[in-house]
Length: 144
Picture (cartoon, helix red, strand yellow):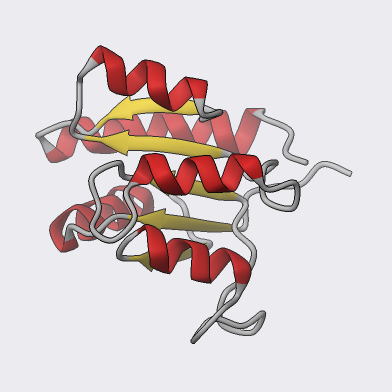
């Protein structure tokens, strides 16, 4: 069965980045569900459906977009926890961060990230990047 992306989960503590990401996704024709969490702790609560999260309000994401620099539990810590858990490790994760540091790229891939991209500074470039990600992750890739 060929599964298509139906829900995208975005873990990013920056309200503006979240708004721009959603606008870029909508501009690129993504009409499905987008959910947001503010930090790595909330991300893990969402994925494990703990606290305020249940199967009813936390649909399983087809794709996770993860920022590295978040409070409480950063992206590296959350990524490690996701990839170390047999029930979570198949979730495709795209790190989308402002970092351009080679060590962050290497560390992310060592922890099992599926893609690493740097957030562009201009909205038009973000739309371009989201468009490319949409084609790859939503039209080309076959998801588990």
